[in-house]
Amino acid sequence: MAFSLIWVFVSILVLWVSNAYLSLNRNIAIAETTGLPYIISPINGIAGFLWTGIHDIVFIILKCLPYSQNWLYPMIMYLDPHRGWHYSQELRELHGEAYFIISPGQIYLSMANADTIYQMSIRRNHFQKPVEVYGIVDLYGKNILTTEKDEWKRHKKVVAPAFSEKSYAIVWKETMNQAYGMIRHWSGAKDSNEENLEVKDTAPDTAVLGLHVISGAAYGISQSWEGDDKELGDNIVPGFNTAKLEGSHRLMFKEALGTLVHDIIWAALAPMWVYSISPFHKKWYRSFVECGDYFNELFDHNLKVIESGQNKDSGAMGIIGSLVEATRLNSSDDSKKMLTKQEAIADSFIFLFAGHETTSNTIHFIILFLAISLTAQDQLQSTLDTVLADRSPESWNYETDFPALHDSFVGAVMNESLRVMSPVIAIPKVSLDLRQMNVDGNIVTIPANTFLHFDVMGVHRNPRYWPCQKSRISDKSHDLDDFVPERWLPGYEKNSKDKASPDASNDNLLFVPRRGAFIPWSEGAHACMGKRFSQVEMMAALAVIFKVWSVELDVRKWASDEEIEKMGVGDRRGVYEKAMDRARQLIKESESVITLKMFGEPVPLRFVKRGKERFKEYFV
View 1 (tube, rainbow, N blue to C red):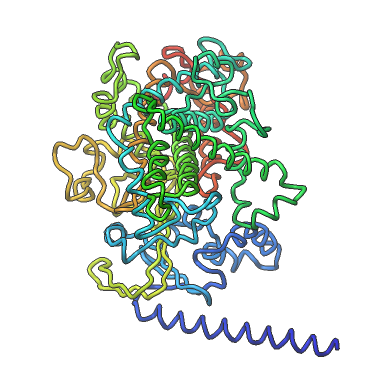
View 2: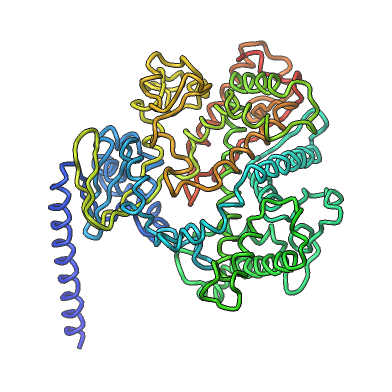
């Protein structure tokens, strides 16, 4: 009996190895027909969530093997599911802007050629979203992110009208209100006062800011910061914006959503019923259930508002209203509805999740970069003074102030942060049939069933497409790893015009990258619908914060306030440079879990009233 089981096991193993060998050789033969370089790997180029979850542990074990330093480093580059963040430039320099990773189970193409990325983006019927890759956000059903072709068009047709100029004016106003709320929140913290705000970690607060903005602007439910409930007036919705809970709820909406999103990777590793019985995931599963209930209640609440005719002047963009209305069309016949109720709920979740996660992380990184680059911060504040002058914040408006800020150095700061720390490091596509592409003048046939990534970091940091100079921070010949917003200004590099988009004109105040070279919101028909929403939010938040405040790194890890006061110029500068180096290192250690963000040790900051800075004069 035992011998028979061993024989069966060996037979299955031999069959599996033989099939993998044959599949690998077949895929290699296909890749060789393209003329592009390729690498052989045991792991798929677009790895599954299991490998994504365990690869760090495997790498630690491999590093313990004898002589691993001789062979492990190049292998790790290809096996790392986040290679686009950790090794994009090394891989581009080794293999070029387009190369294959060939495994037994997949033909994978990494693409960091701007022109080809743009070609692929506009040919959306030829290069589609591999919707299975986005399955992790299918928590409440298929949505606009996890659908393709006619199904995707149906979702987009419903929500697209909500993204309008009128809507962006609402986003501008809501962001200003919430940014002032965030500052009040900081001023109430321990050791803070009216002229000095001490913030140990801005990331959680910018996440709350982003959630509040999209909740108020897109869903019509105003949010308040802790202690600011009086600001809500008559707009209290139990559970959604106050701690008062109703029905079966045990968590506030913000707490449930935050817990769900923070550990959303669990959704990819097992079906939900596993977590419903797991003793280790009780709060996370509870958050999943509560969020579903909240989205149902949000839908029902807005349905009543629409049916009563009270939604005409709601002061919100109307995303949730559009979704609810789409379920009412021909309501007597479910087959003729634009969306089902569950699809509307799924879209509600995805807009809230994607909309606040990406923008809030970017605002967090911008604040850190400005604390590191005091020169850039000073130039940003000078620009704010020019555009906004001495006008009261009540007079700041979307129609005139947003365009002026967006096309100024403030916009350059936003763009540069997105270039260096794009929220999404790779954009997946799939070619289901043979497709021909022009790659630098060569016609390349992309094999059928090829999975590919637009290598966002690879193209964002490619000297071929960007104005650059020798780095002042590292020993590299270019500064594209560095935060240098000045590169977006005319004349940063002599041949900047050669790298700009052919569509750029002399009227452009900032550098215009060629199509496909700057893709933080993706490119083409599937580009992010919320692009202008996030731009407006970032401009308004930066205006509110930096018109009055300056940000500096907290240097108390190296010297106390008393010691700083006794220091000379050289010593003060030296202490701040240590804090700058540490902050850069912590940013570099960011990881991509759906979006790029910092984990582990935060960067503590101090916000001081302008004119009260302690280190600015040594760097500006």
